[in-house]
Image 1: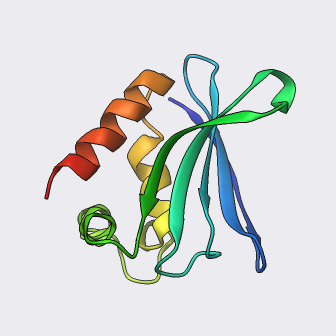
Image 2: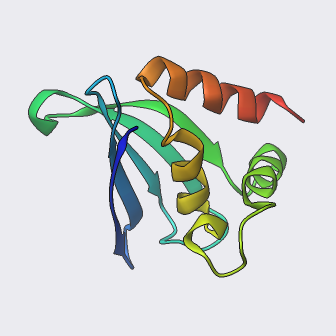
Amino acid sequence: MAKVGRFVTDPRAGSYCQITLNSGEKIVVSHDKGGFKGGTVTIETVKFLGLGSEKIFACELDSDRGRSALGRLTAAATPGSVEATPLGAFVELVKTCSSVAEVRARCDGLTMIP
């Protein structure tokens, strides 16, 4: 199972969580609004030694698709829990993935459903 790092929140920059997948690849899930509804959730791969990153997924939560995706991810979450936040919901979605390819597939599948 992947190793999920701690959730870091910066009131001005937003929040993020680093995950090390079973393959050894590292991804960062971030929410630019600091844990509140709205904004953008992005998932990026971390390059060697943390020098740069590549965006593999972005979800604008204020769009129809974003609201729909977040609604599906948080439907079973306990209100007020970490899983009920946009960052927590997307971390829950990808934390069982074993590779970046699987993260891409899971995220693409989430936003393909109307």
